[in-house]
Image 1 (cartoon, chains in turn green, orange):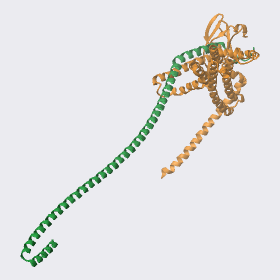
Image 2: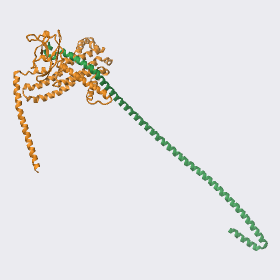
Image 3: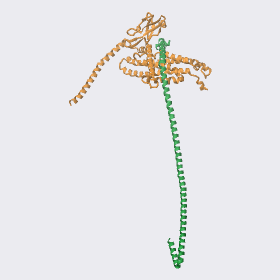
Image 4: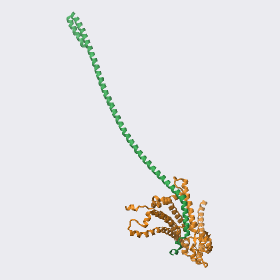
Length: 169
Length: 368
């Protein structure tokens, strides 16, 4: 009885029936032709966006990995270059030293040979000198002997003269 | 030189002419208003202006859709009595002044405040016979409801076609871009928080109920045809929707849900027995609260707007409109917000009840 005070709060069965019918029609048609494709499309788009973001993240990580790899390689290359340079320097030094050594020994050898040659020449010259001196002595002795046989003072004088000549020689 | 002198003169002449013209037009209008305002009280004196009945007339359902003045769209009246179905035009129930008259169909019918009753020979209502009448007419509300259904189907099927046509990878465009955020809002703010992973099964219902209520709220705000019907402010409509929520909740109720109602776990036995009637009442109070919340909010908004407009007629002066119209605009703005919020709350609480029905053993795990 309380509800009949105001017709506003008295639900009208006719309108209830029509509301139910309208709602069922709406639920059926929209569910089939609107909500299903729309929700599917939105879900697909969101999945696409998520995938794109994930891919971007992955690529970013790969890029970072690549960069660190590059840096590692670069450091390695730098190290290698340093070792190569060091080795080259060592080889160079060694070569120079070797060359020096070789030059030294070579020079020593040449010197020794030269000295030998000089010695030989000297010896030859001395021998030659000796021979000449011998010859001269023999010649002088011959001449002296010849003079002596002729004139004594003259001989002496002549000897003296000869000896002077030798001195000049 | 002479032209330069003429120019300001022309300007002065023109402004004087305009001022004169305005004054004359005001002068013409003033008596017209006076005539109108003097005419109105005479009319009112004849039949006293009853604010309450006028407002209630606007809020309640009717068998004719009033357009303006003496024009209205007659709607089909469908009645089921013990003599079977009966269809006639709503125009038969009123005379040319929109006063209800008796229509003699299978019974003599007369409309009392929008409800069709059977009258006796002497014009009094035959309550006993009236109870047998089932009125399934296409009333103003039903017509508005069907219009809403058509509107929603057109809107959302076209949006769905836009997805099919434009593909899912491209950004939404036009109307699609207006609707999509709202759909995502319903999904992320209503369905997901309360239903978790099982939200997909309830999305069609929640979306339908949300947009159905919202568009009815919005159309109810439109003061002229084809709006103006107070559908979402009608208790029959809100009760029907709440019943759907109630049925879905009850059908989906898992063991845990029923256990919470009939044998609350984790409490002493007397407390369990004490809680049974409260919980059982709660099951029915939930849909009733849904019904009354939407009905009362929308009806209150309509009454407020109509009352503010009625101020002009109560005070019987045009000056009152200076106050009433800005207030009406202000309240209408709030009503726009309320229309959205009520649709949101209805859908959200529905989702909450579904979530409660679906809930599995969470609390026991917490206790352990």
